[in-house]
Length: 162
Image (cartoon, rainbow, N blue to C red; front, side):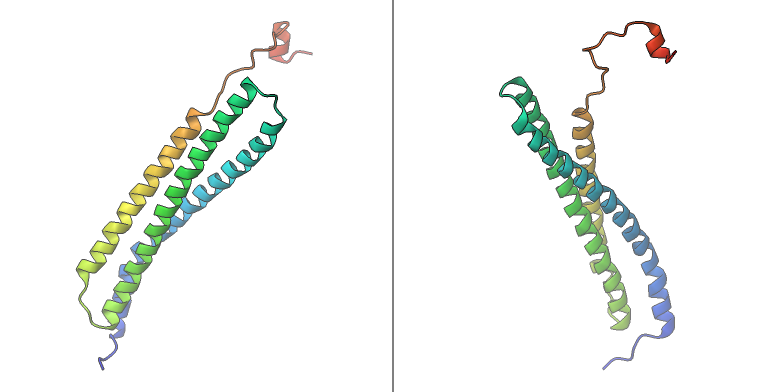
């Protein structure tokens, strides 16, 4: 049986593990944002589904179907982003575990550590691309125009004069 790694080696491994731990914190923050967006999409979709059945058959239902389709696309993209960022976090955890096991068992595994880290970064890139696509879909489906069904009587309404 091998001697346990000296304390100084473990201290060095802890120093090496600090950067991946910070990366984990960043990925966790991204996952928090993504899950919040997913929850918001789900809430809106549920409300739109309820509203859909109350609409008369015709143009309004067609518009609502388009909105529901955009929400479904957003949900799929966020799910992909969440999955890839979670894979990234798991791989970073494996990097940290491998660092410690390498020190404790006196193994030399830089290629394994590098491979895990590179795959983690690819998963993170994929997750961020999915997140960016979701943002594009969300902004494309937003309508920001003033209502056209009411004519302002005079400028005093705009200025707020009483």
